[in-house]
Image 1: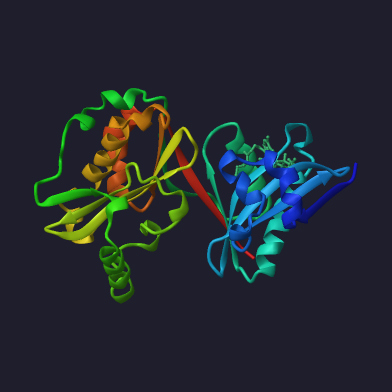
Image 2: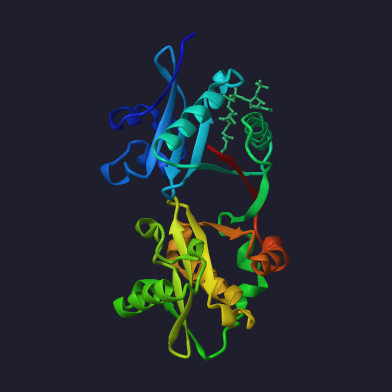
Length: 298
Ligand SMILES: CC(C)(COP(=O)(O)OP(=O)(O)OC[C@H]1O[C@@H](n2cnc3c(N)ncnc32)[C@H](O)[C@@H]1OP(=O)(O)O)[C@@H](O)C(=O)NCCC(=O)NCCS
């Protein structure tokens, strides 16, 4: 048995697309536009693909693992360990100083990845956020919050696709001058996958003051990626109602019979939103799990 682990060149990606999630397959094919940020590490046994690690260089200093998979019949033979070593080596070669891995606390896989990361000297897992899922237009349709409108008349909600260029420029200019939102909540990240059906903006007294940005991560699933409301307005509790408006727009649309699922990502630092989700949303969702983050200095 000859194990061969390499960083894949563009032409090799096609052989490995079966070893990652549907939403990442085009990245493994390394289409020209993605070639710079994303890279794939492939494992072959006797020339047959058996494992894949897909990574993204998210900044000049940091690379992040997006997916890691080894065919069941080839597990516990050191394949994932070898893939990780190679992915880290490539990150270092690109000038990165840090490698990040996020994983979900879902058994049985989470035990395997947690043990693997411990064995590879990653930092202990740190709670990084909550992921909640609604499936098949399920219990969420009975959630009391869908029946209310909680925003005052001083707030105007609009579809993000209608955001005028001048306001886009205003958001960016203000961020450059005096940062007013954490970069992880930028409305402009991953604009190619943005779901315009229910990505919303909020104006308060006529000025742009918040947004909920969603992404279509598969035909069935809309991910609620980012919810933000200007800091001075957070005390009025506008963030959750804006998110609720986005859910209502989704569920009221005929497209919700295609995009039947919703996935919500709430970063750990937004404790207010986590508390809201635990109290008001989770009872009406089908699945909830925590996201953990491990890092390694290269
Ligand atoms: C997680 C996964 C990638 C591990 O692949 P693998 O090739 O079997 O891993 P390795 O053989 O390199 O294992 C290295 C170490 O990880 C740990 N580990 C791996 N699988 C494990 C399992 N099922 N249970 C407990 N520990 C496990 C062990 O410490 C192992 O060392 P050991 O075999 O000497 O005890 C593989 O199980 C998989 O593809 N799972 C489904 C996808 C997934 O969960 N991906 C991770 C999400 S980021």
